[in-house]
Image 1 (cartoon, one colour):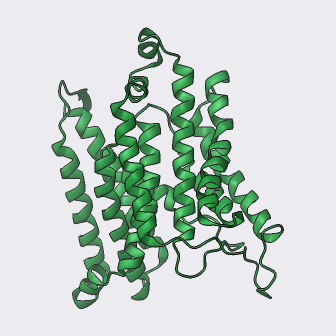
Image 2: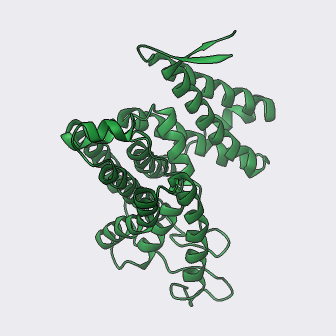
Length: 319
């Protein structure tokens, strides 16, 4: 078997990937539960939860669009989301929280960006490693400077400011509009050219180092805002615990980006699907299924998204 690049990419394979992902989920849930339990798992939707998950996943999916469409690999979005959420917890109000989350997450990814630009260190490795560092830093702050001392017997942080779900949805939609507008501008053209190789950007008279750093910094900033949205839109429990610092939403965003074809509008649709999968996962837990099963369903969406991307770009030849 070998892959041959298509002369014209075939977008239909993203539809095939989505339908295959949906079929996988339906088959898995019916096999594990069956009958009335399966119907309840699929249809019991908490609208408030669904919308808040959609908003956070959408913003993190857009963060992936910035990096992956530019040919750079920010796979540490979970760490940037953790830092964004931590910044939101430390903020006194919503506006400050959003600004601080973007700034802190941008600063957090700045080191991998500089290592990539100046020393050629692979950004996939450095962004992944900084995720683990982010978790330990967050645990330190939860246990010390940001600990809520009023909760006796529990090690949790103080609560983040509360953000209404409709406001989070507005932020997600504005982020999508902003990404579309950026890609229609000249700077977006150079970001897309970067995926074809640094020499192409040089030939266009621009610095590939500058645009590589810009793609990573923009990706980190959006991931940080996504982390802030996730924690600030909770109806209760807008805090971190010592045991659970990261929520996995950074990985959900990566899944949404690939399943959405690295297209801002596709990310919106894929984020709705991921939010539904999140609800399905919660419902699976209520009927006795382990949490790993729920996580595997979201993981399957990313796998199918990658398959869709490969088939979109390449033709499979079985010989």
